[in-house]
Length: 246
Length: 223
Image (cartoon, each protein chain N blue to C red):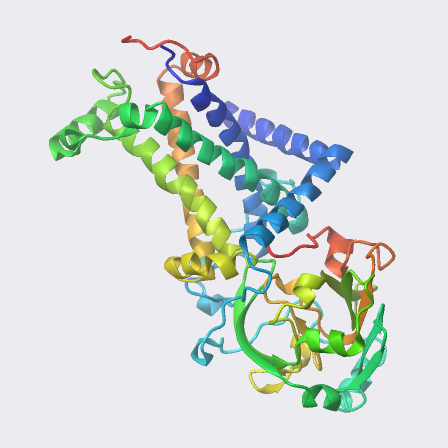
């Protein structure tokens, strides 16, 4: 019993020590730096165009789990859903020469990419689905990025715990061939729980990067002035890693 | 000659810190989704091969449920853990620790010899002539250094979506990402099992001298 008591005390002291390190300036900088080491290693080892695995249709999961917002009730989203998203617009804006405002029809008429890929949630589960939509690079080229644009921000219709969902990637992931604006899942319009009517696919990163209920794509020079400045809803709220390839 | 080389001692203690932080933060990550699957995918109870119990906060880092903070620690410690393991392998090949002390001989694999070793262990008789380690020790340390620890690195890479475009073949070898995740968990608990037995045997074999020698290097009995 005494030994167990000792172990519990030693364990608690160890955890307290770790938390002290994490809370210190140097400690939190170190934890942030580690994310950059991984990103650097991934970029060093992996060609910027290298594809995430694609599966045969037979590998598709029987249904596709939804996480985070699964049925937004804020703003005019319920009304838009009720009319089948007939008046949904996707804006491409920010540091672009030629801002765009696209209807779902516009998006469906663009050249499409269909890919059967695996979705990995930060929690640990995976699901496989077939996604269809235009490559993001197509929209960015049509809007013509200004040279000072460094990040692409995804604006979303859902408001979770009082904050509007958003996400961001750098230009390497924005221009990756599998980065698409998906409007079909397994050949059907996206279900609401999976982000209807539009969601991002960022196939080399975890699920929270794949912004759902997409309303705008915004080119920016810095993420500092957006949300709380960490580049995404979960990054701002809980301190999730901005680079979610780990 | 020292009982433990400097490289072994540096690795031993740095590895202890890394593995403890990785294990305890890993328990928090496990709490985020308490099911394990085989194959490429899995997300629902009917697909799981194991429902994992929730690990209480006191045995986790950061000591309360935060997937983000746990991942921070896990991501940080993965680097020194993997690099130090590489360092240890290079060091023990170069200084011949592996060949001299850890490699088993054909004679040792005879059932009678193994049985005798087990009996001696159960009698808590740790004196053995000849090499530094007896067969069971060689087997345990060999498995930990050659299989359990490296598999933590490989299965960890296998779970990481950013690594998959390059290491997809490795994920396929493991049977898919969810299999890699399951293996990550299994090897973590094999390591935990080793840790318990290792600490127990150190306590039984005279903890003061064992720990002192792993710090100062000590001297070889037979030399």
